[in-house]
Image (spheres, rainbow over the protein chains, first blue to last red):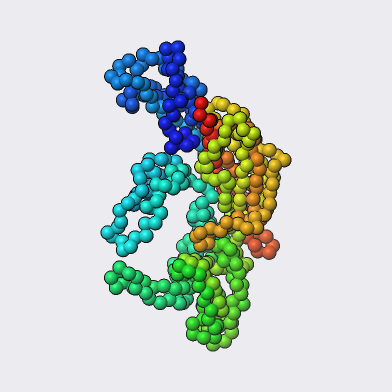
Length: 85
Length: 362
């Protein structure tokens, strides 16, 4: 995330045709995962994609109204080979 | 920023979000917390701090480099105080403990007959240091008792191993170099100006070795975050410049540069716009705030093209200085006895430019 103070983005999270979508904008990340219940459970780490589709049923167990997701991204920094030579 | 522990070296916003320090200190009298109490308002604190252009990093690299060249600085046990021009003060809150203020002259060498030093040069090194927080000029008559004493013979020209690498020619004192009441005499410095909290290390000019080439500045800055609007004319171009403490070979810097762009598979490959490359001398450098650190004398600048959203790492792999032949290894001694050392390992460090771009709100 380039500007980490701007980490809340309601416009990234959308709903259409019975499915939720999350449009990523943390460009540069290699992996991501998300939580549908404020961090109690997380998905496994997945490869980066531009838009993540989330079936509405993942929110079914929540007792509160409305949907919220938390997204974490991971950048894989590879040390250049020159550093090891 | 925390008072008792250090902040993260990597980019991390947690410390900044924790808030500013707002207590005082029971242990230290009138602790000048200054930056600590406004640290959470300074975005620099949450950036990455492994900055290869940092003044302190460059200065410590020079310390270590000098230790490899001058055996006395690495291992010399013979530390001699040549003189001190000091006085005692009582600081508030120090309960009668005095603090000595002023200028010291010290030499460092091997203990003759006991130690065998390594390094390129094994002779003594002369150190001057001052702990006043203002610029002070010390001027004393070389024939009087307070003369500023060096460990070298008079008429020796000495050169500072730290920036700005200035030279002085030592004058006759009344102190006999061979302790036989006749010439040659010990060298005397008739006058010296010391910057606040400054230090100098002198060797005879024929033993002086130039500093290794090092990065002094990078624009837009280490871990800089840059916002551009999608669709704007310059959305994928970026102006950068590197400054160095020694003159460099322009083509060599260009060829030594490589890019690693983390952009989640979106966008093209970063390239240097060749027609935009400008190499020039820096005539008005930003001076470091710490004593002895080298400053910019030469710069390389250009425009990068095809820069996508994401994180850009720029790497400089061993660009050549025009001071020395960069392809040689080890120490090369010329016929004039100027010792030039290779800087082969110098650029094995990353220059990270984190060029971040965010799209406009959807």
